[in-house]
Image 1 (tube, rainbow, N blue to C red):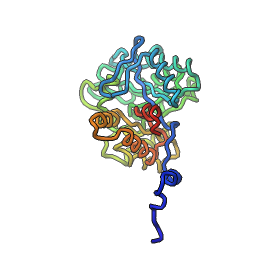
Image 2 (image 1 turned 30 degrees about the horizontal axis):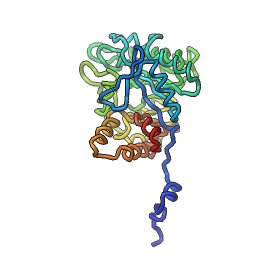
Image 3 (image 1 turned 120 degrees about the horizontal axis):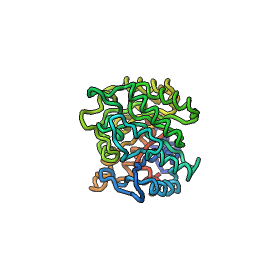
Image 4 (image 1 turned 45 degrees about the vertical axis):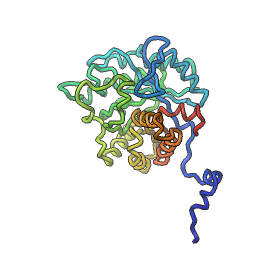
Length: 322
């Protein structure tokens, strides 16, 4: 027998030597939920290990994260005034803007700050845009989103991440922030975001459930792989710097297909449902948490993601799973 693949699996040393997929702490982005008030660190029941933090406590948590290697964070705002037109989303004194200013003042370039750009947590109806006649209006929503992104850039965000799935929003954001002198602010587009049941726990975390209907008229149909690729490549043409697939675990084929069709960096979002299912199964002794988490992380990287947004990042780095 000339070919015995097991020869290169004999010991850990040789397995590590020929491993095709590698992970590093530089690949991880940790999401935080920030709310108003002071000295708040409120557990999110649906997401064990995740919290709502006030800005002062957020700064302290980020400092702890930096010590274990978490130097990229994604910020979500919770608890703002909800209006029909999402006016609080672009307020220069919004919770997100305050958080960004505090983080950049404290940590400077030691920390890379990314902000989520979507209005679902800022509208009375919970949809990701401006609702008229029970339909989310695309172009009116794009204008609001671009203003929101500009507010974040003005606060000091290194990168803005539109997650709404409106057509044309990447171009609108790029043009507006460039016009205002923020041409070095990067855009990580949720370029293919599926209408998924995996977001369930996030609804509690972000207080962003739609009051009626669903998001299938603007988020991607999970049955469509070719359209998923088209969505991401459209955002590349509009000026996105990084393309993201969300969720990650059920869409490894989409990540791989996109990797083969773009030269841009690719991110994936290991979302709340994926995270909470692992936590729940581990609590019941059904799975080995460390092993299943790391198997998932390697799957994301093997499929082609170079950036992994995950709530598991703290466990991975604090417990030396990597």
